[in-house]
Image 1 (cartoon, protein in one colour):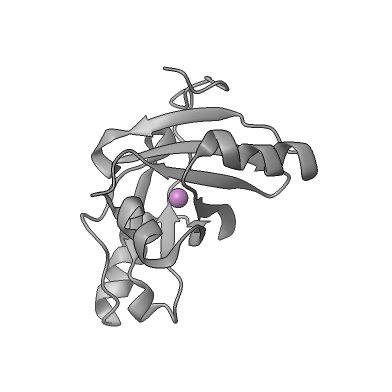
Image 2 (cartoon, helix red, strand yellow):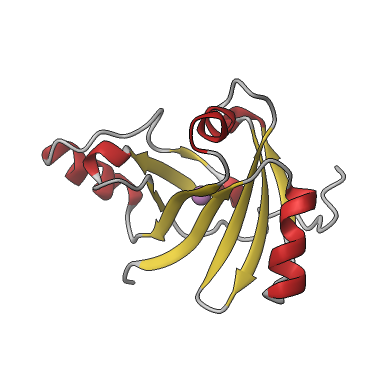
Length: 146
Ligand code: CO
């Protein structure tokens, strides 16, 4: 298994507002909406062949995505790459002085192991690495009302 782009994370103020562009103009569909309390974020996934758009709406101002919006406004928040071994990537990061953000690894959307590498060490973009999706772990709730 090789590395592939898993998703493009975009910080938005409102998933309800933001999904209109991605659905009506790009023709994508929201496959799931999931609240991840531990990250303080609501996540909408819109798959396309070869990847997904991940719309990130903060659950409160005092959360990582809430602070990102305050500082940068809406926009590209992170790139996520699926890697064969998240733990190996974290160790390789440590060996090269690349610091992670928060606990690494931890559980992300769909029950995957994830880790984030700080933009200071990745030439300006927050980079997420994730393991393979856990079968059946993803919620199927396109309306996001639960
Ligand atoms: Co992500």
